[in-house]
Length: 280
Length: 286
Image (cartoon, rainbow over all chains, first blue to last red; front, side, top):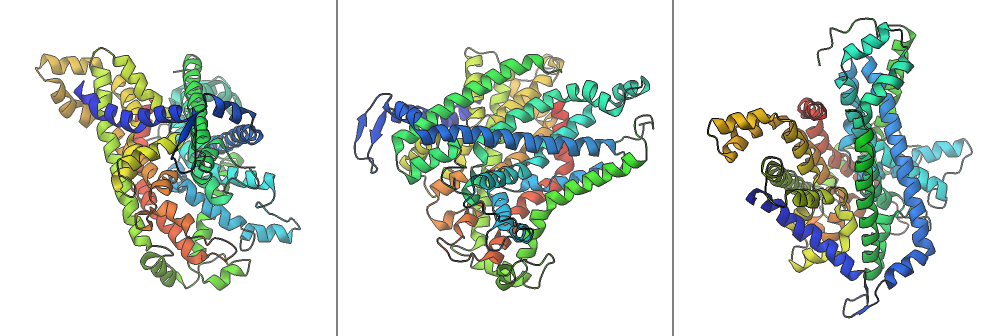
């Protein structure tokens, strides 16, 4: 029982207390200096849900995290399957591919920003030569594309590592048995490998969605700062910009609460649902 | 990984073999290009960058740019930011491993009232990163007077369950017979923990250390909020502060040198602990 104490203590002080505070504050409107606050009940929530920008932010988050998850997991699975086919050399590729795992989202953002910068970016320059005028500062779609690519890029190695580990953990006898039975590669992949990978895939799915929801803040803050207009303002970014830049604490707290509920529900549903369907 | 016993039944050499390599090489190039470009940019002069296209091969300004970044920086010397990042990352990694080893041990091996409650309470934090509760957590830290301090940087980020969850999963795969055998031999629970469970979890701990060190090193939003004093900036968040506001041209060579410096420590950790790290991962998947 005592063993739990450190974790419980840290969790309560730095997690549950702030979460409770968020719920409490979400019921008030306070002035920017925090001098006085007024109880408004669910007013902040009503206001938020009626807010066009807030609803747009929902859609943005869905598109952004969907795309990021699919792109990074897709590329990673493709590379992992390729690397797993090699008898020799998969270790070399693995070493070469895990580097970006160590690169912070914010740094990844800076790297991609540098390539696509309007004034000095090399990709922008070559695109210009081909007659394409890249400007993610003004163009919504381009801004979204850039943050998705930058976020996925850093994530590929993480997913690759897990997929490759998962692939290599599959007993080779099973696959060879299928090969003897005449199953071609694609059939083997679909009927044996992919189902056996499902615990890994499930794990990665959850982790990647959470990543896209939260940890990409650095990418977005460095590349677009949520712009142009609000085109790349995901929910977490909005909590930050309303709370710290806009100093609208009530609204920011209400947004935190909504996020808490969404993510909590998502997690529980996912675990309950998928735990039954994944092959172990 | 010994894979010599694989027969040719599944793998054939031929076009497919070379296509496999080609596919991987393209992947590697795509992954590497941004890092390469940053490295090149950190070795050339500002003039070469502001007249696109920039060169694709390193220039001769390596020492100048890195010296400028490390010892003067833009707001604060990058060397100072590196130290801050190191303290924060180590604090988070070690702190989290210790508290979650203990609580996973308690949850798996002890039956006490409210065990499920505590598990779910800790588990709930798994999916709710600090980003969600930034404003209230910020206020808590401010009330404790922990703004611009290392403990302010570290503690809120320890309050999550990823590690507890992983250790729990791992402990559950440890055969019950071991615990029983230890009990029959008269070992008290803590002895079992120290002498059996802990050594058995070595690879998991190492793997987790890598993950957590990088997690801590790469934090962005939290340091951005609570370190108003540039002296306490971590390197990852400090980069963004180096961009000028308004229309001035950024000092790209120094910024890129800083980016490279920000990547090096976590890359060293990942590459040097790669074997251990991946073994730990594979073990925990079984």
